[in-house]
Amino acid sequence: MYKFIKDISPAELDAFVEQHPACHLLQSSAWGHVKENWEPYYAGVEENGKLVATAVILSRPVIFGKTFWYIPRGPILDYHNQDLLKFFLEEIIKWSKEKSCAFLRIDSGYERSIHYMDDDDQEPLFPLNDETILATFKEANFEHQGFTMQMDESIQPRFTATVYAEDVADGYPRRIRRFIKESEKNYVEITKEGPEALPDFMFVLSCTEEEKDINLRDQSYFERLFELYGDKVQLYMARLPLKKAIESEKIKLQELEENMANLPESAPKRKIQLEEQISSVKRFSKFFEDQHKIDGDEAILAGAFSVHYGNNTEILYAGMNRTYSKISAQVPVFIETMEEAFEAGAEKASMGGIPGTEDDGLTRFKRFFRPRVVEYLGEFDYVHNSLIYWAFNNLLPIYTKIRKKLSGNN
Image (tube, rainbow, N blue to C red; front, side):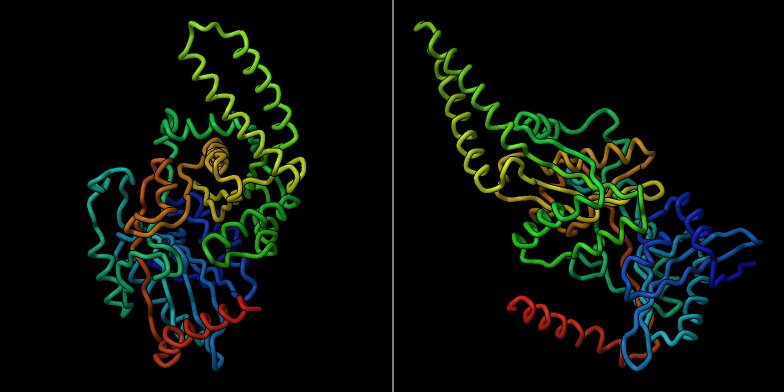
């Protein structure tokens, strides 16, 4: 016998989610408090007194006293247990109606397929097995929003690039190792930092916003994540000590020029090599000296903000100072984040969403890490009030676009 529980404790929910194969940060109890304009509900299903399903439900006011309910990357349960899924859907429909919900959206946490990003044929690691799940949602009158391919077609991206610990147990791809070596050569320093470094992180995030013409998050959002998740937060920053770099390059140039002066005439190839090295050092020296006048003794290059939860780590946001784009900084920041996560017992580290077409610049960067592409089942909507649902889907996007345009002109 199944029993629907409307008020399980946050501790009980987290204990269940963190040990479940479908564990996801967005289904942690703390995630319900990340955004202040959402009210969280913690629900579950028991079978013979044992918890077999949970859901973090986010409720947001819309209009006329009605709300919008959203379950991100959930519920957490065995989706192939048709009776359990059917029971959960029936109960969540009844409860949402009691709570004056206009419509409910479930962003299923079911992983529909997984393949390695660098496989040309994109051969899935296991066969598709979602027919029964789709049918169960349909029988409960949920409408599937389709197998979307672009990131802006759903609240959460349907595809993510995820690095698995077992895939890098013997080391990272050669190109990644080269990037790390280059960053060390160029004096890049990677450090794990706390909330006091958020202004610096916001700087590199703003660089990303400016480059891609998007608006991400303000500093209060990340401060809240630190408060909610504590030592589960990973904030790694890449910095360049410009004063140290300038001094080191001067010493390097002096040594190269001495070698050139002592070079015998019978070594023409070595002379060409030294000339190229001297030219490179002079070029970097000038760049460092020019930037030292602007940035002072230390430059902020890149950063990544992540949260470790259960068996995985989510790299939520990352940014890079494009002025220093020729110096590898973002890659070592990601590697340090992943290494800490794997050492702490994480099985995987998600680098965030990508389009299903896998053909944009973001995907090309993430491809260096040889991740697996995880495809989720997608979003399912249940409508209690068709008029409000129509307005939400058709009028709200127009209003939001106008408001962003107006705020951008201010």
